[in-house]
Image (cartoon, rainbow, N blue to C red; front, top):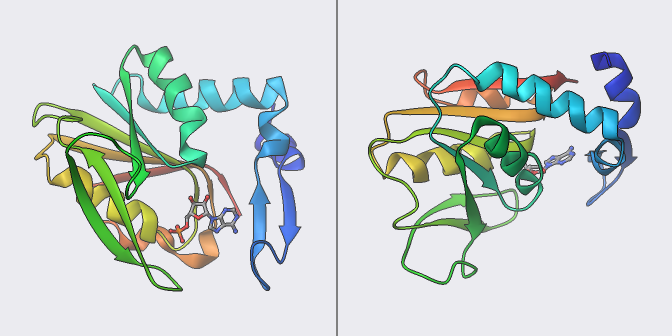
Length: 174
Ligand code: AMP
């Protein structure tokens, strides 16, 4: 499958969840086995030689591909969740969204300083969510952070919010 063919399986929904947003709906790609295989293989090829020790998925659309890649790389999966969902002791970061403030959390024992971490989400828009996730992961003093998206909206320049030592890769660009 080519990137252009994959794009034909991604549905654009105008004005969701609010007026003016062109929402990239990946469920139409996820239901296609060839697209899923493409995502899995492309992500694996990007990260197979990086010494990744943990894959983090961001709630909730990051929970789809992160564990699949984790299995393929032979490493564990860790969820970043919205405040109040994780049952044990947590570490958290708050960040400003268009409307109000959001807080994301990791369990205190989720990572160690020896980890090489890949943080995955489905889509990069402004980068606010992923930047907060990187700050959260930095609190553990990990060795290296990689960031991955299936889709990047290039015109929003979201990748500019990340520090230079964080490697950002996306499979599909609009
Ligand atoms: P941001 O923090 O602005 O990069 O927003 C990223 C998060 O919002 C991701 O978890 C996406 O799932 C979601 N998101 C933002 N904009 C869109 C869009 N146009 N289409 C699909 N998902 C989006």
